[in-house]
Length: 611
Image (cartoon, rainbow, N blue to C red; front, side):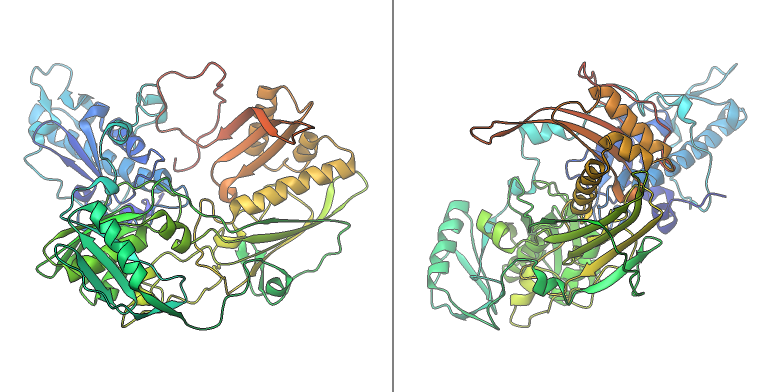
């Protein structure tokens, strides 16, 4: 039997996922968060579909410790795959139990009961019930095995037009973000010149109602008026004196001196392994790189905190409130159960920016100023100077062509710093910025190579294409000159850029059309081939100044192909991309917009397993 979705197996109580309200609505609970990808809209549609109720009846409650299931971190483009699967199965169980209750009331067999927008009936029965007539009995039920779900051919919501995003109106017209929260105090952190500076002197009196918070080298101010908090922070910064600890950092280049001692982990069945590398001699070589990248979120990080009676409440835009709760508890020396964290939308980042750090900043200030609700905002300088960056990467490619023009040998060596530094209760150190500046500091976790499949540096390093002989190696560089962590896709876009660029260079060397060259090495993958053919059909071919790219995220999720038409002004060197064509197979679409541009085309697909 197919096992339960992991999240549902971890939290099997049905009423942790689905509840009926007293006024004819449904509440669905998810541990995943909305960061602009539209998952709350999609998850609500999944629940409404499975329960056979109108979409407007379903309210989705997201990521609130003690209230929603613990689903870890929202990352890896897996929310629909994981939380969606759990909510679909939980909804199927809720429907099954409600039909059983209705059947007993109506004198019917369960399979004879009909449902339309939560109204229950059956042939030859005049009485009508609703789900909410049966809500006097809570879902006191634990899910231990699967129940049948609605067949996709019976869907009336999922995959159909008319489903709208539920979060856009509030974001466009009102204070939907944590930055807009009401507070009694507005706070700012006074930053040192760098991560390697510590406070030596701060001789300053702050008059009420302003407040100064100092814990070691962690310096912050608060004021009931936000503008005054900003002014106060600048005044304090002018009086603070700092000293550098340790030697000055080296440059930021991922140069040969950093690459040479890097630990090598060849991929065996997709997993990095300390086994010896198979060094292949290749005749074609190329190297590609990417610099350190900022998240550059539209608005800097922010968080709200309040310390009352030894308990802490936090509102923040962290993508992992459950692990964050445990790490903040460790820093503050309190029980994690004394901390309640609720996700509130931020500016969005798709990765590990300063949101977790801002939560600890706010918590430290709130602890120092108990009984007051504190809104802490980072400045743009804070964000660019102290957030974790997407790591720099260096990628060396090699290949040899056989007589017929195909690829006989393929090598891929990717060098980089860690992409994995989110705060985790399992980590030996504390990976939150303020923790290292306290009077009793916590050291960050030493950088380690991630050795799971498709994690960090080597994500999408395995090519989507098939070659007779290949060697793909991850090279871990331990000491980054700046904080690094997850940025959208981790190592995927660096690796995919290198693979697709090198495929074009090899096609040129072999005298082959770039599309034909890719087809030759895609015969094992009909879905990727279908996406490739779809984009070529859309654009009419690669004639002229057109380029092609193809990838599947983590080699198992969404597969996409893009053709770009590019023009370059010979006098100004200005680059323009007047047209793009995109084809994608993302599995089953949970919701779609009303109406479609006339140049969109829907390509038939087979749904992904679990979609």
